[in-house]
Length: 579
Image (tube, rainbow, N blue to C red; front, side):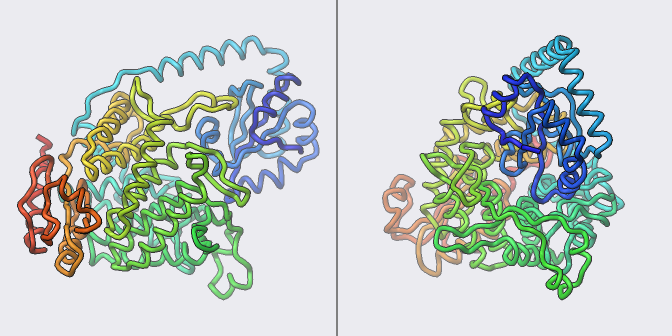
């Protein structure tokens, strides 16, 4: 079968030949994608029907997330039948050979005999979608946070932990939201949900006790039988959760899990290809037999395939997770690795003033995706708040400026998932994904607090307001959005530490131990930052910390214990009744 790439040429071919398109969305880590290649797509009759009656297009999910978000039919592989214009006629996931033969014949006949009816139905559906995209924004309120928290509680599985029944995904964004809810209010039931879920995941079949790391999800409610692929994205997100959980609950043993995830990421995904070319690979393939073996047996068997492409957003998520782990575990070498990763992304994937989604070894591809830009800004801010890389702030500002210039909707607010570009099919219509907008808004709120630039906060607020009418339909999957709303509604607190000697180090350590979910950190060198200190009114010659909540700032604080007390008092701006 002669697969085409997703391209204008493939769509032009379909239009000129007046053939529908067979779109296959797969991934290198996907077990059932491999099965479909070995069965349905190796079947002689399927091959004949496809070559005669369709234009087949193959898309890798990881490399074209924009295509996947518009055409995924409920999992991988996705098998979608499209018009030559890229509208969906029919589809599913894995389709065995006999059923695939029937589908191919039926879709081809429908396109030949009932085209007018199909065209009318598609046009009506597209008009309805377009009308739904034009909506009024709403006002942000704590009710949004509470309603999402209620949705999370409603989906919680008290018997086995996690959310929903089966298949059961880790849902790291839900867990991060719960950790922030605990920081805000100390709710006992929230802590119980976190402990039950983190313990069940690390103690069940979704966790690899031999090499470390987590599989993508569990096929059973009890976390017993996993889907065996291991993803950089998932492990980075879970590393961040376990690291943050260790800071909140230091006696729970989450540090062991965090170290094990790092062990797998460093051993399997890390690619130390030289200065400014150090990054993590994207995934490791599923292999059920391999993961049932002992360590010695695995060495003889040979490890599953690793996709060594460098993906921008996933590497930035990993960098943020390593910063969090470095803070939680007291290991500065993890921060160093995070810095190496972000430098690689900035130097390898930014070209022509655009951040590209991936590089598979032949140069950067697919520029300007919102998820990548938001993740890079976030990781830059995380590096900056270690106090070790002040220049990371400039990188965050540059990324935010790119994001706002290319992706912000200046009329309705919010951010599009991709810039204006020549594209095909449904990708010509830009979308505003709620989770990516939440990540972008959260980053801009942090950037505003650190830089004292209110324009970033305004952009973030408009982005969040767009989803007020829509968020309830997402249920617990709106957790990242609710977390960003909570930050937007909370007066920002900023700790600034001035000085380079031991006294400043002790103040900085106290600031980094704080568990305030809306706290930002700045470290100033008296010589390097003399101009900025003058703007803020802080004496360069004085080693001290300053805590500002909104526009009200403390007197200079020289004692770490005094700073800790001020930080505890600052959490009083988070009233439990959200009054």
